[in-house]
Amino acid sequence: MITKEGLVKKTGLQEYANPRTAGIIAITLTKGDELIGVQMGTDKQDLILASHEGMSIRFPLKEVREIGRTGQGVKGINLEKGDYVVDMEVVKDPKGSLLTICESGYGKRSELAEYRVQGRAGKGLINVKVTDKTGRVVGVKPVTNDDELMLITASGTMLRMKVSDVNTTGRNTQGVRVIKVGDGDRVVAVAKLASTDEEEGE
Image 1 (cartoon, rainbow, N blue to C red):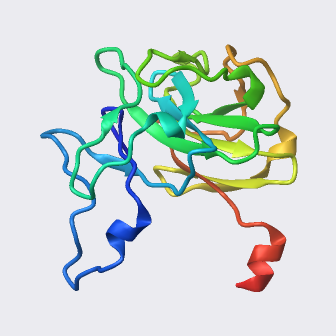
Image 2 (tube, helix red, strand yellow):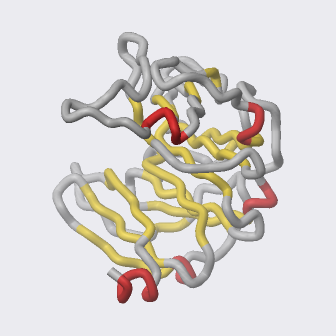
């Protein structure tokens, strides 16, 4: 689990084996913090956190000690004042790339190899050059050329796009426009679509 303020919490699935009708506590949050993401992973994988102001950090999941269901977690990234975490991804294919989407419709794709593994709780690396033109970061997704994404704006506009349409560039760049956003509108969500095989199975 990852919170807006950068706390990472790892708990064994067995802790959630006996759910109640009204639900159970999954994490204890401090005042003002929010849970923003949950993913399954193993100690053989890495975790990438991305911040609103364009920073990112990659560290081994094994650096996060496992704690009980009601615990708070440990610091995953050292954020600058005013910044916050917007997304978390478990690196399942280290040979892939990371696609970053910003509020004003800009996106960039960089090889995951450019995001070197660091120690947990550091300041991280620049993931994308955020400017008034690009807007701040909305989300990140590990992708391959075969993937497709869905972008959604605050006004309800949706765009389905192929990842292969976005050229791979260096990590410390601002990217290119991937969706035209009208005045007063902004991208609010990005999701990776299921593969064709998964869609047919469902």
